Length: 444
Image: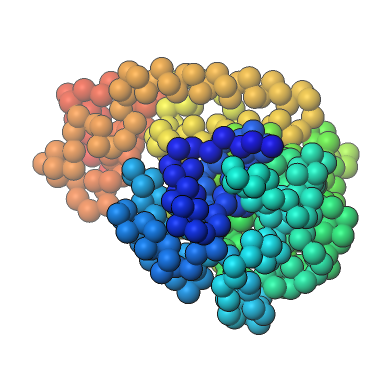
């Protein structure tokens, strides 16, 4: 088997080999090449220890990015390549990282410590593909399999449980039986992992090509991270709009939406408050009044606990709070939403609403058509450079002061003025706005 490596990668390996060292591309780049995907980066493993690697690349810029773990970064023609010494890991007492690392001269030692068979392959043009654990076969069978004993692998680093689910979602694979059983059994070990690391894997999982199967089959593991979803699992909605329980609907909405991190995170959490809002009418139909507001509050707490960035928390909470607005393809409705959300968040909300409705009964697809029309209408409106914010008005707070308004009354009259302009009751013209304000002042 021949893998066509980029020129700079081949040069890195050639330099190491000419200096008497073994060198291979390893891990995810080999996996992606075999799948016909373009690797995000290329990692190189070598028998050279860091000082030897630095000597080999003395004519290039070399950054000491992780000498303790045998890693240096070589900068070649503007590209960065991590070059790491073959190594063996010691015990993992904190279930996160090895207590010690020892360098090895054998590629086999390096591959044996890796998490999954599809990530435990190496390649160079001299030796070809080195696949000691059947990774290529597992790629063909579309399955995620731990290298060696799954319980040992997960016991070393519990984050590998989330990585197994993430790779399954990203690649459209399924965890092999013993790997899946160990993941379920050892899910409580995720408590030992930092919130930031878990959140990163969760977001990658959500943005994969096949999150539905993972979210539904491994809901107990997701609940270990976000216990707030437990009431949603198998919760019957008693609604003519829904064909799934709350959590299955959630998983379907995630998969059937644009793979934007904010959109998919919002959809994972958009109905998290529903079980606490159910009201059943005399005919047995379920209603969830106010669930969007409660869901936004719960989601905010979840994201804060998982230490998502503040901007993400604010944006996703907003998307959840507004996801239940009724789709209406009308200038005034679209302008109000653009004014409230801003242009970028408006279009993200439309994607959230489409994902939500695609995961309901088929007749709800009519709403998707309306939402798509709202997206096109918004594009037209934005192109016309409309007045959607107070700062767009042809008057300002100083003008209101001259008319006699003070304190909070200034903000109130400007808000009322903007609403009137958006509703097309008055034009955004200075004279018309001042007349509007004078009437408001006389009515006080």
